[in-house]
Image (cartoon, rainbow, N blue to C red; front, side):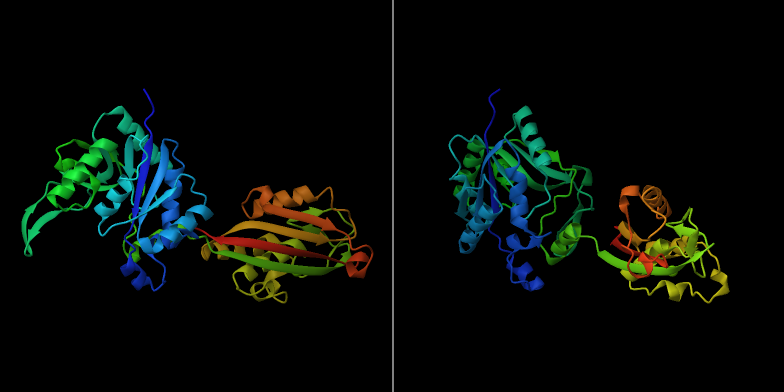
Length: 395
Ligand code: MG
């Protein structure tokens, strides 16, 4: 079968001035950003990615035709070469575009400019459905969920049988000839319609409905826009830094990242003196503005005498999680003259990852000497610095 060439028509003439007034943003609806990209461009991008679609025609308010053209160029929507002036109503706009469809295109798909959540995959499925079943039209929709009643002057006349009701969305797909015929009939009859399928129904041609399983919201109200925005929101990211330094003393054990490292000297400390874990605890507390290790685990408190630092870390991790955050990554540097840490770095990395319940690559462990300078360089002390990043977990 010869492949049918499609034209996508995108009515974007409703500037949504009411929405703009409510938001006070001074930006017209098609240009409101979702995750930094204008709503209309998101919609056009999905259509542009469908191979069967050969051209996209946008119908918009003449006052912002130039802006639409500029955005199409900036965002490289290759197939959107025509931007026509929209009319007073949606049907006027679609008809203006319909008259500009390339002669080689045999089928037309209409999709609202402010339905940015449709995926290229769903559009393609609809196109294939159309190809398989020679019907005059196919529209995307979903079975109605609410109970719908017919009401006249505030009085219920009847409850409609919900199992027969569908909410109709776009895209709507038609053969070009049928759609043109329907539009011409419609204008002769001076009828009213809220979608393109109703026009084709008016000329008695069959239209079928295809169930859309994904989100396909039309952004109409300020509430819709806020909901749509929340889906694109980046998670809250926090960064914390921590540093720790302890004096070295002969005969003390040396702990780093929760591991005991063979060494003639270890940290002089109230607890086990694990500088890496102490710096990590401080970084975690710092990222959330909660204070420092000394406030949580005072070094004069006998309770914490010789306590292993994993305990501190465990408590602080519970706090971080309780605040709704999770660790993105940890990076650290340990400064110690001797012993050499190169044989231990990987083990330290794996152990810290285990303690924070993460993959080893989440944790960076770097070790260096201080070139015999300063307390670390003279073998009198060791120190560690840590950077941690957290993200708010999506509930
Ligand atoms: Mg310490």
